[in-house]
Each structure stands twice: as structure tokens, then as C-alpha cells.
Length: 310
Image 1 (cartoon, one colour):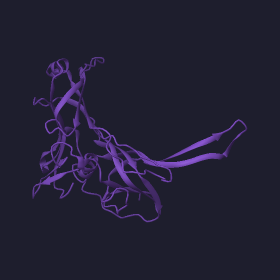
Image 2: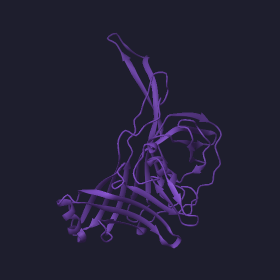
Image 3: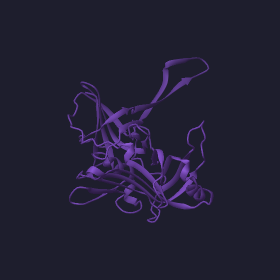
Image 4: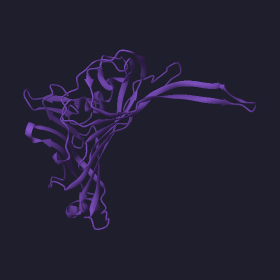
């Protein structure tokens, strides 16, 4: 059975047993090999090729769930605090307000990719470079991950795991607010988190030679297509370069599950009406914020569910 599962490494790059089976829609991680043909004025031959190392990298798309996926945010941001002895538990990323030095490195992911029976690729030293949550109208909410790995090996033995309880995010449970105001009448929502990391390679190392370190601040972009009816409230902020708080939520009230993105200080960077035929006018609302060491400005992610650990 085709399956992708992940395990959390205690030492970056040291493969561990996978423990979490994911609800994967697509997995396109592959070894990106480096090579250079040698071309002289006399000739060119397939034998005249310099083969270098590789970097394992590529995108992965998951069906978004309230449960069983919080550890992805831990590996994206760097740390987590879990509170609450009974349902719902609260998982907060990062563990404290603001990004500390310890959040920048020290963790990795092992991935087991089952292609077919007796054909398994095992990746180690994984880092999440980006994560985008997309919530379209009347469609499946998804996570798109950008992944990079240190190395991989072929195997013939797959790990049998049972996926976590799948509790999907549904569009009619999701909304966004700006500057403490009313819920925006949105037609689609996106939040994209970019976690830039450095990639170090050296001679005699087939894959990455050093653990990727965060090379810049984590950037967050919120995008919402909203109806024109509330346009004036946001345009005044955009036109006057006023910052405000953005909160994007997905709330499943029946079982007290929630996913919440909060940006205490965000800047609107796009806010222009779109007219098409006789349809209602919409506005592509775009705002940017950051995870940083500034406690007053740093973004945070919170998950409320019955997972003992994220």
C-alpha cells in the first residue's frame, strides 16, 4: 500500500523509526543530483561527466486535519508548549512568545515513502522550509509543504502504521478578522509560512554536510478573497499604512477543535477591488507578518484538540 510516514529525530540526520502515517494527497520529494558534462574542443562523451552529490527536496500536499498534524508546526517553527490535562489540550507554537535561539536548530524528520510492495525509500535529516494552508470555497483544505532532506536509502521493509484520527478542516468552519473587527466575508483563505534555511554541502559528502540553519526571520503571508461590502474598513488601514492584528481561525465547535493563526502586528500589502462581469466585487486582501524575537510582534499558532502531544 502506498503510504508516507514520518518520525521525529532526536539527532538531526540520524534516521529513526517512523511513527506517524499521514493523509498524503501527493508526495514529490526526490534526490536532486548535481552533475556537469565535460565539454572540450575535441569532443563530448557520456564518460566525461563530473558527478557531484545531491539534495533531497520537493513538495508534499496533505489533507488538513485538526488532529495528528501539530508536530509539523513544531518542526516548522522550532518548539511547542502543550497545556491542559483534559480535552481540549492547547498546543502553542512557538513555546514562548517570540522565537528564541533554541528554536533555530536541533530537530529533524525521517520520512518513509512506500512506493510499492517491497520498494521503500527512507529519507533522513528532514526540514520544513515552507508551509501553506489553503482553504478554498467548497473544496478540501490542504497543507502544501516544502521539504529538504540530508540523505536517503532504499529499503524493502515498510512500517505498518494506523493514521491518526482524521478530522478535516471544512470551509464553512473558517474565517479571518482584521484589527479586532468583525469576521470578514471571505470566499477563500490562505496562510503561507516561509522558513528560510541554509543548505551546506562539502566535498566527500553525498548529501547535506551540515544541519540547515534558519537564515532569516520566518515570514507569514495571509491572503483572503473577501466581498467588497466591508472594503472601506481595510482600505483605510492599507492607505494609511496602519498595522493591525490578524486572526485566522478554523473552528469545529461540536467537538471543541480549533486551529488559530494570530499575527499581533501585520501590514496590509494588497487591497484592490476586482470587477468581473455582474458578479459581486471582491478584494484580494493580502497582509504580511513575522515570527521574530520581539515578543510584541511575533506570530503564533495554536491548536486545540485531544492529542496528548502535537
